[in-house]
Image 1 (cartoon, rainbow, N blue to C red):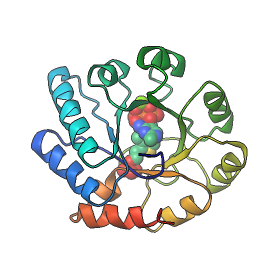
Image 2 (cartoon, rainbow, N blue to C red):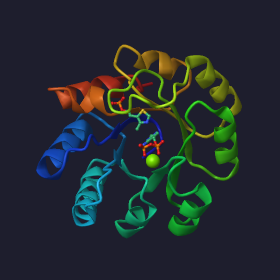
Image 3 (cartoon, protein in one colour):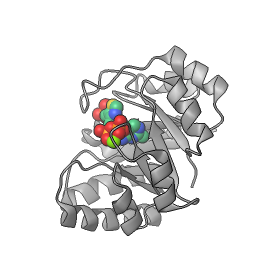
Length: 204
Ligand SMILES: Cc1ncc(COP(=O)(O)OP(=O)(O)O)c(N)n1
Ligand SMILES: Cc1ncsc1CCOP(=O)(O)O
Ligand SMILES: [Mg+2]
């Protein structure tokens, strides 16, 4: 299990639909799954997180929780993803320990990524690279930023935001280790096939 490949992020589906969609993405070769649920339904969130963890591990994929360090700890997720509105990296690390994977959003700021890497982030994420149907107001990152980040950083780099199969190859060519995708995988009516096309970008 490595920090490379297709990184799918759940789309707000719940229950059986959520599990079915994620399993389809795993069948297509998703390497990492992030549970992103912005609701406050803590009982459902915990139940879904436990089920997703088990499913991901069946497929040898990593399971990451968005935002919620406490939930990541409760369900023994592989890690957590935090942004500027969330727990600080140091707080997440103290809660989850050294073996947890902690990813940090760096938007379009290389300085944030250099600091995160220095403080022990396991990966950094830049984006949104393209207009995102999921998060239309996200800050915009550019391919030259990604190029410069690749030159300066040794930690794995994740690209996110409005990614499609048309734009994905350029991100990989500029040094993205992971492509984080919501809509272009989960809004597809052939999720497994779509995930497989992303997975193929990482074969070497
Ligand atoms: C892999 C990955 N990269 C970036 C984000 C965005 O995180 P954040 O800025 O905290 O925004 P929300 O996703 O919490 O709305 C992410 N979730 N995953
Ligand atoms: C969470 C997040 N952060 C920046 S863009 C984004 C959403 C990505 O979703 P999509 O792949 O549908 O653009
Ligand atoms: Mg967040």
